[in-house]
Length: 504
Image 1 (tube, rainbow, N blue to C red):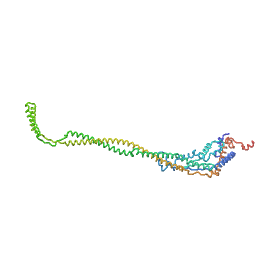
Image 2 (cartoon, rainbow, N blue to C red; image 1 turned 45 degrees about the vertical axis):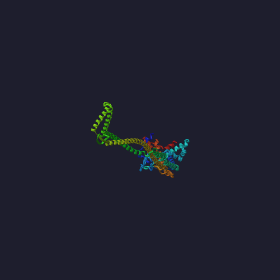
Image 3 (tube, rainbow, N blue to C red; image 1 turned 45 degrees about the horizontal axis):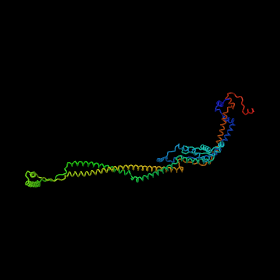
């Protein structure tokens, strides 16, 4: 015998096939057809019963941008834009994955006691007793497979459905999943503990601000000046004025010194006194005196002459005195005496008075310059001290402003987080359960619809099985096949049933 494929290649063309040729394999394989039809019908009945006992609960989740939380950052929060960007496909897919997260599935399994259903399954009865975690894991695995999530086309809606033989279980699974999902979404979108962090930082900067203000308030008492920068500005102007006065004093000192030197030079060339009156008189008084002296000398010689010889030394001395006196009288007669009256020179006195006054002014200017220099040294030292005080006060002011800015910033952040926490408590987020789950009343599939479909599938399946068995059978079934394939004439043919009866 040849293979079935070669036999099919040598058979007649499809145009020559008749309806009898198509139905004939069903009659030849009626046992296979009947058995497969019964089996498939039984499977259809079982499937109809099983599917008609399934109750499907569903819900729809809306992903939107109704709420935009500020960024959790130490910087000032940028104002929320009035037109938020549209929801992206990645965000919707993230929500889908969040719905299927293992943490949510575990909580749903424990809340609905789905692990208890795994304990009574056929596989669980066959296998040895396992731990509770094993049954929970099996229930989570089965829940993940039976839980269907799909994104509704051209919308921001996510449809979630779950089927179970118990309508209460279907509702309980989705209801618990919805609550857990909302909590999980809010927890994922916002970091935990942000309000506590900003509250702690607000209190810390409030205390720091109070301490800075206290140090700033006590600065004036401890340093003895309330506004060192203002005082320093006024003192700087005073220093400028003092420097200008010092320069003026130095100029005055230099001018007075040159004036004194010039006046002293003029005084050396100017007489201290000048004549004011001059009177010429003869020497009358001298003549009288000389004559008296002459008379006295003559009387003295006369007396000596009475006692001594003219050659006696005393007599000669008297003669000599008389001769001198007479010569003096003769000379006096020729001479006249001039009486002259003098007084202080006014120019000299003016120069002397001006020198004295200028010297007094010079001493005053030197004292003024010394005082100004000493005052300048004190002012510069005070300015240095005021600079240091101003720097310390500026540091205190800067610290107070910084603490105030941080306090206001973190206070604003705390209020933002307080608002976000209030929204979290109200479960106001960027997702919402648009269509909440309800307890299903009708089964997911109607048996009136399922059984006809199963019946048709059983008929088509049994026909397919019969044709498959016919195709896989390599035997010759008709004399025509023998004649067509082997190209030999058929002399006689015996039906299979008659041959079996004769053989028996």
